[in-house]
Length: 400
Image (tube, rainbow, N blue to C red; front, side, top):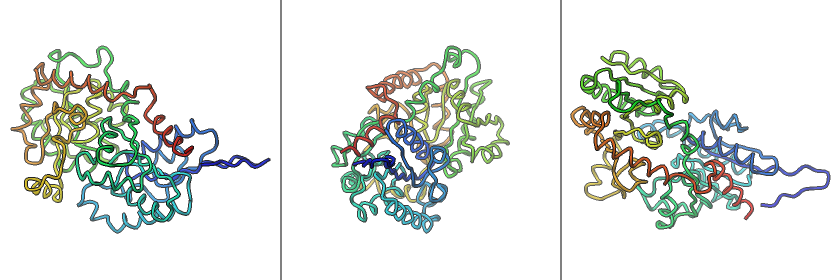
């Protein structure tokens, strides 16, 4: 990239086009935008697709993020005409903007369709992918295909650069995980988390951040809690809920014999993590947050009909290359966190597991010790923040 400064004229602004596909990407994008503004010596113009956080950093989204923020094949099929239309709208906008760099953020089913079409129509535009698809678990052939249209890949997990090198993927750099910047908020201060066995135990219920996840798991969590509560007198149950689902969850748990306390807001959620002794959670990034907070957990997930069919086919033709879908287990390369899929999500399986995590047992101590090792594996060696590390790679690419 070259910046021409004409006598008496201002410096041409750096033009960055970003495409995010859901709320987690909006948060990453906003932090990246903030770091780019701090590190770049000159003005920056942001365009593209994002949510409220990216808007606060100066991006006016070309369409609402909610149009494309869906998960699971069933939900995608219902919204498919809108999603396809938005892909082409994003491509046309990126081509018209002719940015110095296109940054796609997570949500590969949407953002990679944008990137591939931009590369075909405007091959001169550098493309950065922020968050690797799970090529190390599903469809490893994607890595090599990505190398055609992705110039730099910013990875959130420490093993991903080696995975992409092995699979023929694009140049990949570990920039750290966003929770690194939240670690101090997740770790209890003296007295915040009572020692196990002193007073009533505190259990976190985390049924997910998407409506489909909550609908799939909440009733199961209620049945598990019904049988677990009598085993632990005085059990305190906390349920952090994302804003758009909090009212729905509150209504659904109101009739439970032991209704959980609904936690709203990020600060309150972190405070709940710092007090908790164990967690029953949906699969996802929350498992890394729990690990950072030192909270032993059991992880659950239910597949929609399409992925359930893939699971059945997996018995004939393996399609996954990892033995766990829980992120701490994958990073540690050993399965310390138990996971329960589909019909395994039931009181008979989970009540004994959660009960042991709420008391001083070898199972609990194994997880706590493993999370200490995980913390050192996730930390960036130079002490940079996650968003700063990502921004520097973007700017280095433009210099080249």
